[in-house]
Image (cartoon, rainbow, N blue to C red; front, side, top):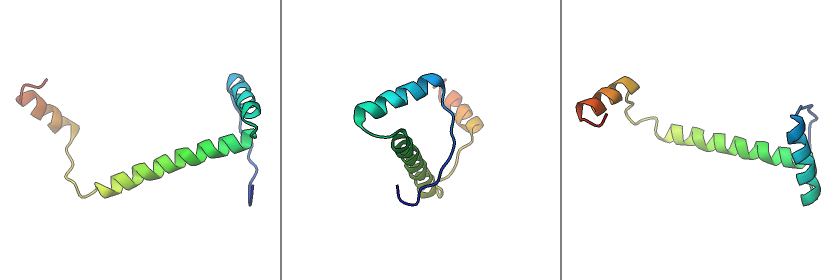
Length: 76
């Protein structure tokens, strides 16, 4: 890995065993697998933030007013 940093993380024993087995089966390191998983999670967060930003100009509706409206229309 270029410009990598070291971190210590702790896994549940079963998770660590699954990671070791998966790493061996796919001929990858646990570090590579964890790095990819973290990057995927961060990319999903970035997509969520972009979606929120795209919709920020939409009017917001409070939970209470939504429930009142649903009740008034006989939906609940």
